[in-house]
View 1 (cartoon, rainbow, N blue to C red):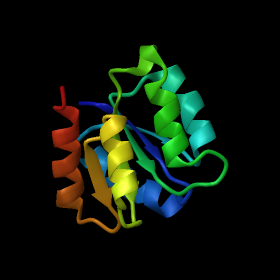
View 2 (tube, helix red, strand yellow; view 1 turned 90 degrees about the horizontal axis):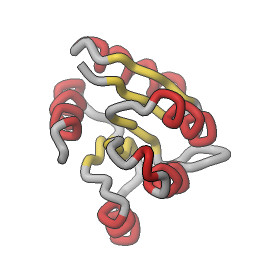
View 3 (cartoon, rainbow, N blue to C red; view 1 turned 135 degrees about the vertical axis):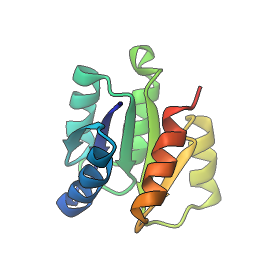
View 4 (tube, rainbow, N blue to C red; view 1 turned 30 degrees about the vertical axis):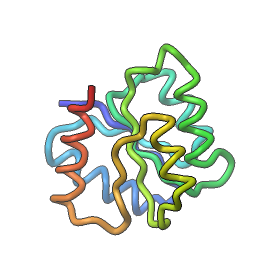
Length: 123
């Protein structure tokens, strides 16, 4: 199974994703904001990062830009986890930075697992 870093400033969202993902035996790491997540992703190099868009300190956009600028982290898949409507600017950003998976809040557990499976199979 995969190692997945869940990045969200809302502890309840992290707990929800943790319970869903551990159901399929994934190892789940957590970070409460983008700054903490940047430290974790460099230390752990997870298979997938599920990152919230709107967070204090370092938001999801800055997190994605920073990870994608680091060649050592190029293989890390990133999924956006958001309740925010996607604008065309955000969609362009996601394409530019190779973020192919968007998990909307709220989501059914089956949908989260389906999207995570698909993200982990991304080339």
